[in-house]
Image 1 (cartoon, rainbow, N blue to C red):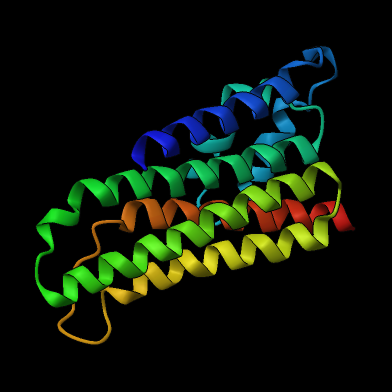
Image 2: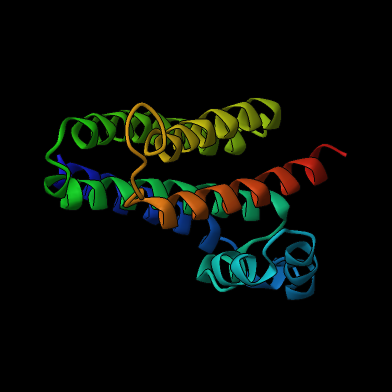
Length: 182
C-alpha cells in the first residue's frame, strides 16, 4: 500500500512538472503577481514558501497553472500524511486511537481522490466542479483532525501539521478560484 502510494505520488508530481515545464518561462506569470497573490492569503509566509518557492511556479504561465500547483501541493500533503499515519498508527493501540486512525485513513483516501479529481477538472477549466472537489477533500481532512477531539478523551492529532497545510492550501486554491471566475 505504502509503495503504491509513493509511486502514485511521484507520478502525480512528475506529470504536473512536465505540464508546466513544457512551456518556455518567457511566458511565465511575473513573480510580482505571485507575491501579490500571497499577500491576499491568511498566511503570506506559508504561501510564499509553498507556492512561491515551488520550482514549477517559475514555469507557470497564468493563474490556472498556479492553481494546478496548489492542488498538487494539497494532494502531496494528503499523501505524505497517509504515509505518516502508517508510521504512527502503532502508537495508538487503544480502542479510541485505533478508531481514529481508521477514520483518518478513510478520510485521507477520500481527500486524495478528491484532490486528484480537482486537478483533472482544472486541466479541463471546469473550475466550479474543481472547487466542489477541493471542498470535499478539505472537509475529509477536517473530519480527520476533528476525530481526535470527539467520542472519547481528547487526543492530540499526529497529523495536525499536514492538516493545517491542507487548510492553508485550500484557502490559496479558493482565492485563485475566485480570481479565475471573475
